[in-house]
Amino acid sequence: MQQEIETRTWEAMGTQISISLCGDDKEKQGVLFDEIASRVNHLETILSSHMPDSELNRLNKLPVNLKMKISDELWDAINAGKSWNARTLGVFDITAGPLIKMWKAAGKNRLLPSDQEIKRALEKIGAEKITLEHTDSTVSKNAEISIDLGGLGKGFTADNIIDLLKGRGEKAALVAMSGDIRAMGNRPDGRHWRVGIQDPRFPENPDALVTVVELTDMAVSTSGNYRRYVEINGRHYSHIVDPRTGLTAENVPSVSVIAPDTITTDIMGTALSVLGVNEGLKLVESMKGVEALFMEVNDAGELILTRSSGYAHYEAK
Image (tube, rainbow, N blue to C red; front, side, top):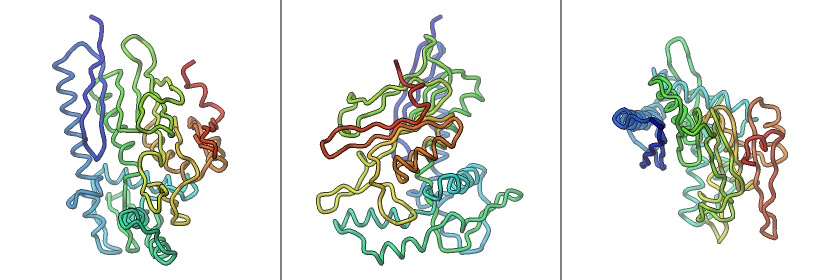
């Protein structure tokens, strides 16, 4: 019997989740979809910065220098955040929450933050202030900091779903957490999974594509300021912040990253948005298995594309 693609879409973790499974056993697929939804809900109770009683927020309330035993999932997510902080020249920082909150408040009040407010927020961040102990699965903070895993949570969850499906013997699937997508195997007809990369100039038009990438056992994430931003004095300010300066990342309206797993693409999308084309391209070219497409818009409204050396390999011909 010819396998078919069954897709379910729902809202969770503050985003739209879409899962495509391949097979001919509808009952088995139904069980898998329910198991995935349950897994996502479980991870949200661990990683969410919006749920007051999430495991992450319990950690954030922990007094300085006290240890807290945490779940394997939270330990892995924080460990990824710390290790990627060093790998991204310090621009990906899971303690940047005070900066993010400051800019959200600025957008609500329609008033740019002062230099003093930025300075105070910068004093409250630093991934190096988190200590993880692998032997007893504990974490402690040596300063008053707050951890926000929003920059890697969707990628972490997408990878977790793929691991779950592999554990159930599945060979092919497509997991999409909004702009973070991971492809496992091929479609039933043997072709690669196809993912469109949207033109940042037309955020409301899903059919306005810059290019299409074809993926097998790879992930792609697209980050940028064209969908999520705050508006102050008629100008858009990105939801992505630079933890080095406290300012928002305005260099690249959109960047698309391809890598073997979604936590890498999710994190790198944020980092490259901060670094911009020149610094970002150097970082990408130094990493094995990572490719990127930077999208800029010039004063004439024209799109300028900059590809890393291997990105075109994944583009549909």
